[in-house]
Amino acid sequence: MGKFSSIMRQLKGKTKETNKQKKERKKEFLENKQRIFTVVLPTMAAIFIMIAAYIYIKTRPKVIEY
Image (tube, rainbow, N blue to C red):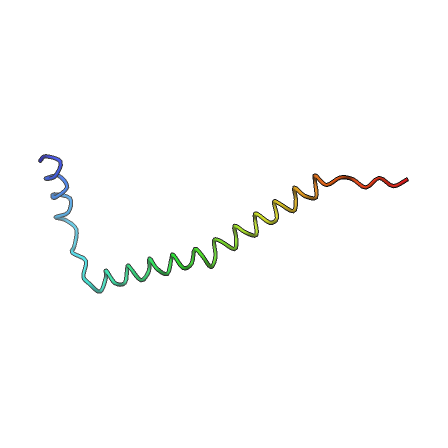
């Protein structure tokens, strides 16, 4: 019971979130989720491709000319 009352004490100071604010926050969360797919994934793919190309170039067999 002591733990619960301390949680209640903390919540007392916070202002109640209105429905408008809640909708706004959900909208922002969805936009951020979308941003992950439009920015982060292509960036990660580009970095991966560059690393793969570097490793391929460094490890390919050397052509010996006589």
